[in-house]
Image (cartoon, rainbow, N blue to C red; front, side):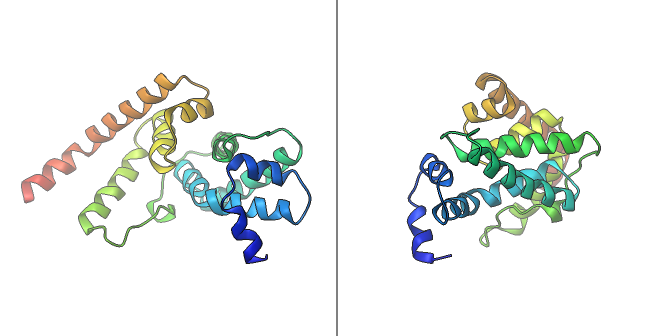
Length: 194
């Protein structure tokens, strides 16, 4: 791929990239590559947080982008936020896959960004929060992953989950409270050892 051509697409909005994606090659390939680069890590992190089977998560990840491409090319997606469409597709594929499997998160399988300046204690707490996500109900977990790992606003979470924005806020707030309750013994122990 011509790097100069690809760099030009980084300035495009999602809506513009979706329009270009409906066009002819090679421009549509560049637009798809830009959307993949822009959202691939976030979609992968979302899927791996929802599913435990690493191979299944990889398959769902690939299927998500394939279905997105097919839907755009088939005029089923017109404009809008690509991340919203991608997460909706990933969510539906994950829900279909979860019918047959029970989900737990393997911390080693998560591809979450790591900040080298993060202290050991902060990393340990982040790992505990991720483990605690498995102990909350799926609806809370999903809303929290969309909010905190994908940085989506409540109205987009509501649209993806087919609920109201108020319900999305409630799920995130209640999920955070449940995680705090789960982690309270650890936090108390940490405070007592300092």
